[in-house]
Every structure is written in C-alpha cells, then in structure tokens.
Length: 325
Image 1: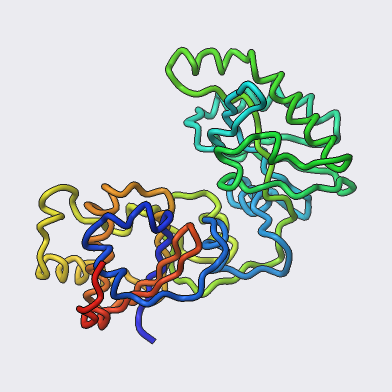
Image 2 (image 1 turned 60 degrees about the vertical axis):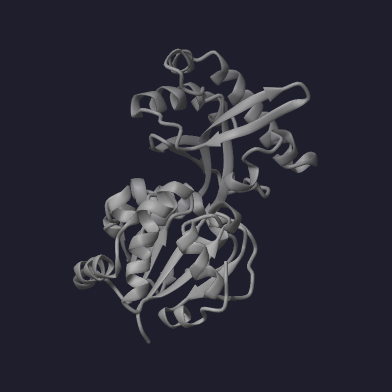
C-alpha cells in the first residue's frame, strides 16, 4: 500500500470556493458519510477499550502525567455572553490565558468544587481538569464544538441528574464574574473567562492504538491521543507549508515536485494533518499547495470534513477531467 495522508478540515461549504481544491474534489471519490464533528473525525483514527472518548484523562496524562486511575472531567475556561432569555457559549479553551491568570482563577474556584469533593487543577493555561470522587455519576455533556454558539442552559444536563452540575456552573460563574483577572482582560480588549465548560469525562484508558505514523496538529487532544498511542506528534507547522502569497499561488509542477522531494525523507506512510480550524485564504495559499504536492507525488489524500463528508483523492483522479467543480 502506498502513502496516505489523512486531512481533517472544516465543513466542505467553508472551503468549496478554493478553486484548485474544488477541482480536485469534483474528481475525487465520495465515501460513506460519518457523524459530523471534529472529535468524531479525530476518533476515527484511534481505538481504545470502550466507551466515549475520555478526553479529560488523556489530556491530564499528557500535560501532567498524573491521571492514574482517577475519574476526570474537563472544566475548560469559557466565555459566556448573557442574553435576554439566557446565555450563549462563545468560546471554550484557547482564550489566550496566561499561566498566572489561570492559576489565579482556579484558586478562586477551588472552594466551590472542593465542597463537592472535586479538585480543580490547571492542565495548561488554556485547559483545566476536575479530579472527581469515584462515587460521582457524571451525566453526558456536549463536546465544546457542539455547544459553541448554542444556548448555554439548553446544553446543560436536565432534571435531577443534572441539578448538581447546573448549580456548580452557576456558582463558578458568580465567582468569576467580578474576578480581577477578568477586569484586567476586559481592559486589554480580551474576552472575560466567566464560566467553565464541562466535558470529556472518563478514566485514563489502559491503551490507545492507531495506525498513524505521525500526527501534525496544534490541538491538545490530538497530542494527548498521540502520546498515549506512542505516535510521533508535531505542530502542524512542521508539515513544511510553502510560502504564502503570489509565489505559492503561482507555483508550478516543478515547484510542487521540489516540495514533495524535500519532504520525502521525513515522511511516514500513514499520517494525519489536522486543519480543523483553518480559514479558506490560509488553506488556499499555504496548505493546499503542499497537500497537492504530495498528491502529485503519489500520496493518497483522505479527507474528513467536519460536516461528516468523507472523500478520497488520488493522483489518478486527474484523469476524470469531465467532472467539473
């Protein structure tokens, strides 16, 4: 079997107006659709013993090495926008928090969670984890990408089962509302961290497996999965994207072959490139020319769009010239 590059992308509609990419998509082969979502696409590459993806425990082990056999729940810093009839989750994690800011906020929240037998810890400055007592029943929480932009209270667990968790989030919001860290952030033009989002419950799995030889990603969960599966993980900048701008756009076949030849010594047969949050202009100018270089060199490109569309593109598909974008 030849080399294959798996590429995680935003929804197909977001990138459909990138001309060179659209032309290849028209000639590619559409596979069976999957459930939408970035985490669904990422999880397709991995196997673990059973159950939902225990994101919190995997991240905790990756960043701190102390997950052990405890039960973990992600409690990522979040930005919630109050509205007339509720509140909307606008951001979760990756809020540009400094480490000292994270520590100050977590220290302020400590008592709230300790009253319930839980321990809130800083994983890294953008991601926090709750260590839970073993007797706690954790309801299902939506993953961040599902909850973003939605009404906060519609996403929280309902009924008696969810009462404790709704109360915890409400108390956390009260603590965070007037915290000096948030006053300073707002003064700098940054969004406040005025809530937490709970998701990814579970214990560290005994094993994680995958068939990938390398992962290129800037996402912490991708790194955590790769570490647990003993896969080489690198920032996506290591994928060796070509220069942006006119030089990239004007790159001919010779330039593309040169890129492929340069990358060949370090390439692995089966790899993953995580571009789940990429913007169309950057994809067109930076990433697609490099992906196309590998395609021209014979690498099979397997695409997982966030909307659930799955496609494969091969060099031989160039011959399907009658298919138009």
